[in-house]
Structure formats: C-alpha cells, structure tokens
Image 1 (cartoon, helix red, strand yellow):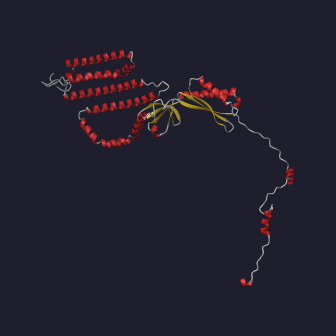
Image 2 (cartoon, rainbow, N blue to C red):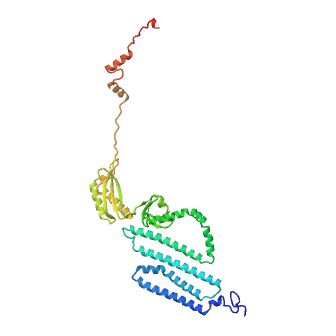
Length: 415
C-alpha cells in the first residue's frame, strides 16, 4: 500500500529508504557478518599465539588472564564501528546517534583494555620482586609504589575516557565553554569541600614515594602491633596481630609519630628479663642460653647476650638480649628463651628462685613500773655545760648578771 512501509514515515518517490531498509540491505548485512567473523579470527589467532607463549612464559599467562576479554570486545566493537560508518545509510540524525553510540562503546572497551594493561604491567614488574623472602625491604617498597601508580593510572584513564565521550556529544563544546567560565568559583568551592580528602590523597602519595611506609611493614600504631596490609589514596589498612584490621586515614601517618620496625631491615633485637635471687649462677645461666638459641632456627646468630642490669631491692635483674630475622620470629624466640630458662632455674639452680626475706624478732620483756622507777633513780644524771653553769667561764658570766651595780651620785649643781 502506498504511503506505508517505513517506521519513520512513508517513503517519498526518488528518496532512499531512511531506516529499516538501510539495515536489511545485503551489502550492510554481508559487511556486518564479515566484521564479526574477522574479529573472531583476529582474537583466535592472538589467543593461539599467547597460549603457545604461555607454556614457557609466565607473563603470557598473566596477559591472557587479564586482557583476553577486553581485547576481544575492543576488536569486535571496532570492526562493527567501521561497518556502521561505511555501509549504514540512514538519516543524518540517526547516523550521528549510531556513530556516537559506537564511539562511546569503543572508548569504554578501550578504557577497559588500557586498565587491564596497567594491571598486567604491574603484575609483571612485581613478579620480579618477591616478598616471601627474609630480606624483602626493596621488594615491599617497589610493590607499594607500583600499587599506587596503578591506582592513579586507572583513575586518570577513566577520567580521560569520560571526558572524551562527553566532548564527542554534538554541541558539547558550547556547554564546555560555559562550564570552564565558572570553573574558578567551582574550583574554590570544591577545594574547600574536599580539603580533607585531597589531604589524604597527597599524604598517600607522599607515603608511597618517600619510602616512609610500605606494604607488609611492621608498625606500632595506637599501641597496637600489626602489618601494613593495604595503602590506598585516602586510607591505610593495618592488619593487627589478632586478625583485626585498623583503618587509618593517610594523614595519620604524616602527622602522628609511629614506629616502623622494618623500614631499613626486618632484623630486630628483643629482651627477656628475670628477677632472681642473689645466689644465681650467671655463668651457668649464660651457658644454658647459648645452648637454647643454638638449637632453634628462629635465632639469626647475631646477638645472644646475658647481662646483670640491676641488683637492688633484694633481687638481681638479668636481661637476655636475642636477635631474629623479623618481628614474628623474634616474639617466638623470646617466648622459647623465657620458658626454657625458667625450667632451667627450677631444675638446675633452685637457689636462684626469687625469695621474699622477712626478719622476725621476739620483743624484749618490759620491766614493771616499780622496777623502772628504781632503775631511773639509780641511773646517774649527766649534765651538759650550760650558759651560766657547768664550768668557770659560765660562773663568771653568771656573776656579771647577778652582782650589784654601783650607783654614781649626782651633784645638785648638775641638775
């Protein structure tokens, strides 16, 4: 029937079919099928090549695991975008809409692929720095910096992708100009609103690249012992020894003092103290210490010292200083040394066990009242020399005060 046969409107003689007929043209369908098949062939060949390389190379296995899906989607959307741009014949408005949709999909897929490549390069580089060894200070520093760079890179790629999609919208240039005109005021408002967040971001970057804090560092924060489990742009997660997690803002570590036990090396010294009796045999106790540490793999054979550090209050204080490869081994080593030395004191030197000495005296019997009075009367009295009595000089001083004073007569003429 004339006047019908199109979804947009009736066809006009001498004009191309605008929508439905353009999609069902044989040329477009053939090109669409060829594009899909070509995309699958390209991805299959690439997969075959990387699978062959993955038999001997670990990086190829990581690439297949991380980049397989985004790579396939990028190839497929790119091929379909080319087909729709060349063979799709529709109205100009619909062509622009289809082109924008394909462009946005391609940018999204490419962003996914770039982010996957960032993860891939991080994993390949980090694989060269193992942290499951004793001296892993450099490896932990590199892994911390790589993790921070990966997060920053992914954020930058996503922001650039969103900006590219927005700028590809027809008429977005005028909107963007008006937005940039008010960017000064908005930047001030945003800066005030996000002041704490930005401070955490810069603090996280400072910690990552200043080598002050790394992943797996042993730290003491808020009187808690733990390891740095994760460092992000805004917060840091500390894995406490009893499997709790303490989440602290990044600014905490730039404004508050904290202890880092593994900043230079993971090797540490630890002490074990005893309060024992003065009859302790320090020489035999030192020999027992050497025997204990020589039989355990926790000791790194650097330091094993027994010293008497104090001897007051009825006790002798003995301090044992030992060393280990890291904090965890040091804790176990201290417990082993304490337990075995206590057992040695009980079994081999029981006289050295701490004792509390108390002196008990029997009170003397007090005499009766009459006997006390008689003893007081019989006891001679000793008098010390006084000011006016006791020796010749005192008597002379007393006479000066007690003798009569002469009175001089005064004549009437002088009155």
